[in-house]
Length: 336
Image (cartoon, rainbow, N blue to C red; front, side, top):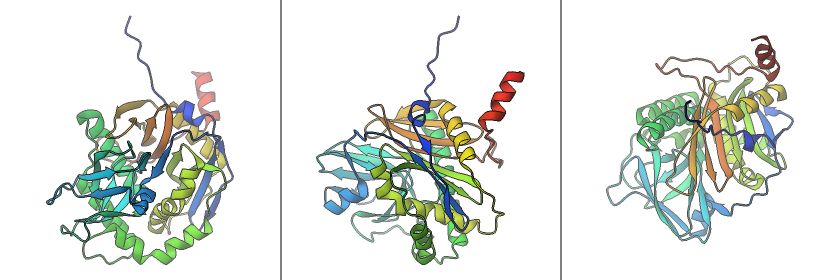
């Protein structure tokens, strides 16, 4: 007989969640995920640590290197940096390739991707936290980083693919950017993006959210506690809204709680591969025909889970996600 293989899934983290009522603005719909997590992990967000002067993110040395940044923390607690978070300044703007939980008082190199193709000179010595990547960019990056983590053990993206997604974002936002910077799209469409944020306030108690554009699921973000989602909510919604700008002409249809429930059930069944993290915990990676994503798991806590539709086959062709509702899957299993 073959050796038993333990399958790691997200089911235990997702089972306690309740799906809240959907609410929306224009073509963007959000479905809150309510939980009762005790939030037992003690950490501060990177943006708060930078503001407090206990975290500095800089280039690696004077010359720098595109796919890595140096983080120095003097904080007494752990610091959480988030997948898709924008870092603005230094030699060029970057985004985090994956969520990282930094240990207290540590120096760490973090994996990043460039989102400003046409600049390589210091605008500042250290980085500030900017906006948030679009879900489409994060989805593509997640798939490539997951592949490289599983095969090479390195959380590296496909930099060319990231630049392609940034270019699409700039076109959709009708933004002018001499350096091809994602940040210019955020700044130049600030009034429109702020309209989404103002119309879609954080639902009290929510620790996760499913985002859909024109009725199609585009992202799931779940945190270990509601306070973390509350703190990052405006920037997270800005990232979703960047995608909404690109799909304004798409035919709109409702995204229902039933669809949200089917998505969560599918996510809970997908097999995950735990991979090393540059910080505390493990980087769980998963991919099915329908979804792709990752979860930062530390001390048996899911600190941040992000999932996206898997719209590419292994040979690079586009496809649409296919998530069957539970009723259809149960009928099929009874008939087989």
